[in-house]
Length: 391
Image (tube, rainbow, N blue to C red):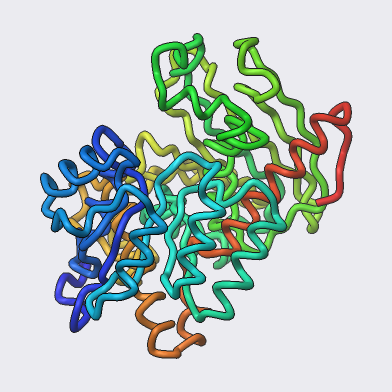
């Protein structure tokens, strides 16, 4: 079981940029960070409107004097305090990730950021360089990878249960934007605006989630080349896509495909990953996250349940059960596991234990860079006649 006695002497003093009133993602960040008492929310730039920012912060227990309508002012003012913030989470539209993360890192703060981390690989590499010079951690909220059965799959693949990996099928294809919902939904509107969202919509918004699942399950498998085709079925979204298909060739001869979509009418989420080996296959579906399908050639299909005695995982950071087998764990537990890892990495880095950070799994700057690289290469392929491009 999860070790709830694990504590720091003092929780990490933490702030948020964005994620204010009505923000679903902001609520997920705050709830997950608070889960294990490793973070304490002490400040925030929740809203660019000063009155709303202060009112919201006060209502969730933040000192009104530490609620800032400008993130730069927050960083500057908090740096003057002995009890100032040590880390910041960025939950804003994509356009602002790079500049906000850069400002926080330069001020000596750890950073947790929504994905995609930046618009370009060059920007992401710059953030990596700054973080290294400042001895700070960058975490990226690929929140689905805190689910225990993702790590069960990773261990099974590592142990050779599937044999040689041949095929990886990735998809995140929901149907909630199969019509032009952005006319009345500001949260969707910015996602289909290139100046705010960046060079892609669904590839960056959901496709990178599915791709990172593959990176976690099969970490040693690297893309050699890919080919992408993308469509704007709701025409007003062009040049950003609301549907995309990607074919991949991996460096060991394996192949893969990724389907990212928001126009899969009738589908709720449909984030799935299937890994096919020479001996067996596994499949995980985020709408049933506590189970993993395990199919051995010539044997009956198995449905593995989280928390059963056959599970490989015994890692208290991610692998251990927060509650016993049969009780459903969900997205908040997954995110809490990710935040738990972020905290351990930050604490180790502050103590100068870079080896511990290097040996700790969490969605780090490299995960952020690879997500941006995937987007860049998909756009390069799709916008040049869907040609194969080297990764």
